[in-house]
Length: 100
Image 1 (spheres, rainbow, N blue to C red):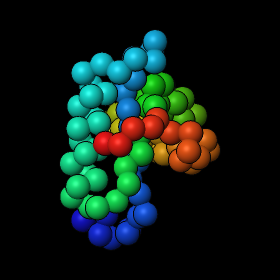
Image 2: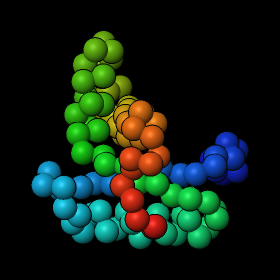
Image 3: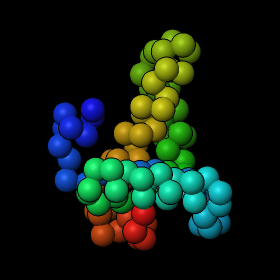
Image 4: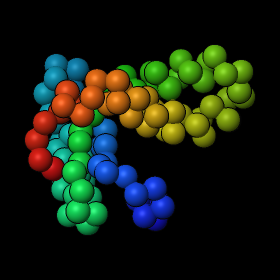
């Protein structure tokens, strides 16, 4: 529904890399998910390092003045925003390569 509504040219998937830059089971799972998305929507899927995105979300919430309950509800959305902002800041060419 979101893809149909917004008609993006590509999708960005967070890639949970290990702190040593290696890809573990969670990253492999997200690459598989990216393959499913690419096949279903017939568009490119880019992978963006999502390390520290939750920490960035927590920092943004700390500055927001929201209650603990409100912060918890917003954490994933803010982390996703941080992933996309980093992708856009670096540019698609700098995102983790590899076809989904």
